Length: 78
Image 1 (tube, rainbow, N blue to C red):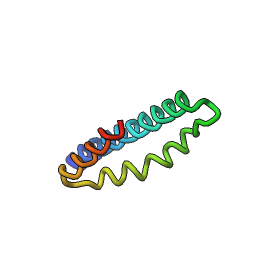
Image 2 (tube, helix red, strand yellow):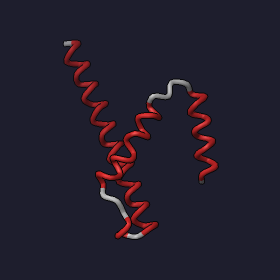
Image 3 (tube, rainbow, N blue to C red):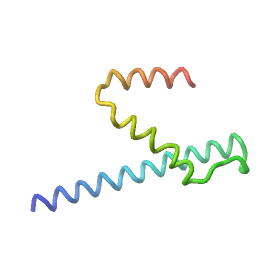
Image 4 (cartoon, helix red, strand yellow):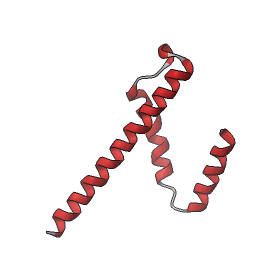
């Protein structure tokens, strides 16, 4: 019974992460399409290709101090 519960939790988390990933890339593509025009907008797969390495690096950050630095950098980029 415990393995079933762990499997359900794992599949729920994996599904949530996949949906979040698709949401991020869809919003990025929409932003690029609105900002630079339809002819310059990359495909959804291209956006995923560029976003995935960034998300992987951010997920590897273990210390919140490093995330604070990243947050400060993003505030300057606005």
